[in-house]
Image (cartoon, rainbow, N blue to C red; front, top):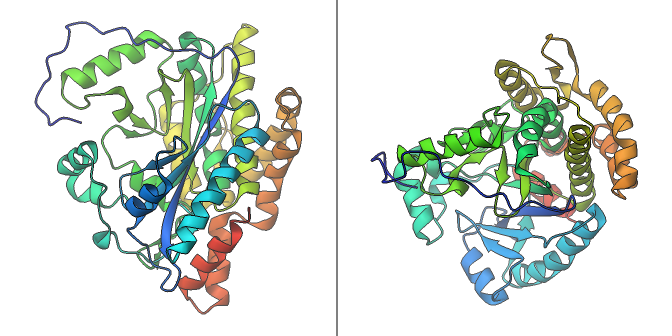
Length: 382
């Protein structure tokens, strides 16, 4: 990421090649925090953990030294992706446990302080903090990213724009960040509100053609906002070199069962839109002001959000709309061999989303947020 000084770039938009995927592949990136086994506070030992594990394409470092990211290879089904993650996690957890730590995943840590966290030693992270300053240093957040393969660049922007209609469903189901530095924020997902403070982060622009996206990237580079396309940090974005759409809406997810349900839902949503394009359908979109309001409502109220459904401003409780959505996607789930995983999405509202479970644990333990960390660690059952 550069400073605000303009870069030497061509006068016109450069072509951005989209690799394309001949089938709707899956990839999952799962961010974990390291917490001390005794204090339950964050531990800045990721560099030592990664060094002990050695070179492994399934294990990545992140912005802060308290974070380890586990990633899959290219998968065809949700079950395959979960098996891939489970195998890597077992290896990582053994190393982490031997060092007196635990793996923890939620959108935020209940009581950790951002000011005590250390930055990973890498030029791109240093440049990010240099530019974004206080807001950049505040990014004490964790999430899950899901990649779905798409065959053609011409499909990417219509799918992204239409997928925003289901943004509040995805965020409300995964919301797991009610706490910030020891205080209840009143939000289901404070992570979503924090992350959008970074330049180029937040909701994507609702382009309809690939050439519009190419023009946007050209403008961003020419004005020095970005140096590389991966610095476009939208909640849903193209990943041209992989031939995927990357969905980055989710808060951190504490367990494999919920993760598999959310991955299946994401896979079905993208493939459904892809098939509808093949059938000649114009995909439904909403005005940006409705999309923005839906994001806020889902972040604030989670599964209790009343969301805007369409361009005609009709509204409905998100969980009621989710029931119909799951029914509509059942044929797609059969094609993608994830019927059971998609059905498990309905279990999340029944047992309570993570933000609800966390508040319940805190109430049962007289506000002791270490008990919340304990509960989240215990949920990671491999």
